[in-house]
Image (cartoon, rainbow, N blue to C red):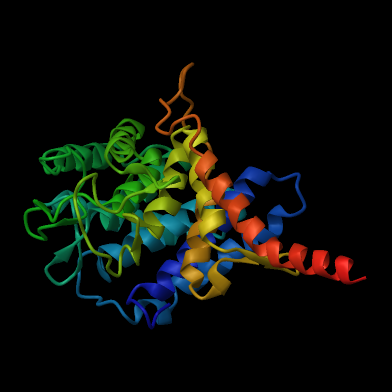
Length: 356
């Protein structure tokens, strides 16, 4: 993954550790499997906080190593501590977490923009949003300490929403935070997923935009678009290849966002689409998607599938975005393909029967 994009090593380990933490949290202390997942989460923390992980990022930024590294490493550590419990983590790791949160918050409070740079003159709101989520997990795990910082960040972010969709943009001016390039499905799904732990209301607003402008149903296939309805666009390192307007990260992380916002029906549909389109292969109790060619893709799916149901909607829930018969075309196509595959076999058997 590191050969494909500069964040590959950190991203893959962080997502794996986050998935392990989420599974451990939901298993509970009475389940014998929990210790295994906690160990895997701890292993991911060690890898992300290693010199090797930091080697591709510059220490000259504020916070050190830039917003992407600082946010994802802090968020991973936050989720591990939440899963293990403060009493289950070493004092050194707790100090590291407290110091990291304090440093991140201090830089944010001094910044003229809510979106800290990840590289020179380059900022992506999603990178900082992940760090904000880490501060939110801190306050849910310990005594609230970063309420003012989170509220200030949300207020500043609201003032810099994309004017067309009233949502967080994919990229931002690194000096002012002004939106650049519009809203993208992959990053909006990510932000609405992680911000649930920092500001549930703001997260729900962003998720509502995702549902309204990005969830689609094309040629009998449901998914999440990378660009809003009616807006063309090409794939890049963030979205990967785009098919029917959908991008893999947007669909997978969109399912995670749906789960944490209590949109269970859409989450099941999107995860079902991932199972069909991801070509999973399971051998020896281990599942790989697309032959395991992109480990970060498998890590994304693990993180999405293990995301907890956080928000509870009132009676009636989220309005359905798909027609009742949405699955009929897909099942019909499957039936046709099945017949085409079996037809030569049936014809061959019929010929042998006549010859006999």
